Amino acid sequence: MGDLMLSQEKTEAAGDVYQQGMTANPRHSGLMVRAAEVAQSLGRDALAVPIYDAVLTLEDNVVARNNLAMLSANRLATEANLRKALSLMRPYAASERPALLDTLGWV
Image (cartoon, rainbow, N blue to C red; front, side, top):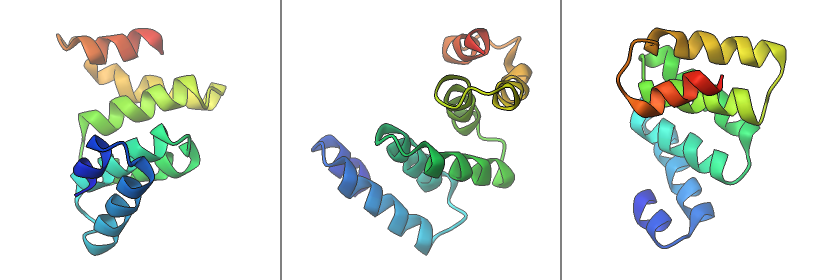
């Protein structure tokens, strides 16, 4: 339902759907990542960060790592956040995935 809302450019409504999904199933990392991505797209970085952090306590999710690192390095760039971003991306130094190498290089 949230993806449908996004396809119709109803980002706020999609965010609400993902939030409801997370409430109903608080350990569903896919819903959590989508909720954080929507929050980020709406400029709600302070909401996205703890969601990404929560995902990473559940599992080693590459999308959550990458998105949190970019968010930390770009919009929330402090020395501590840059260190956090580097620690999130360092395991991908030997990756062949361009998106991960791009994030690591940016950080």
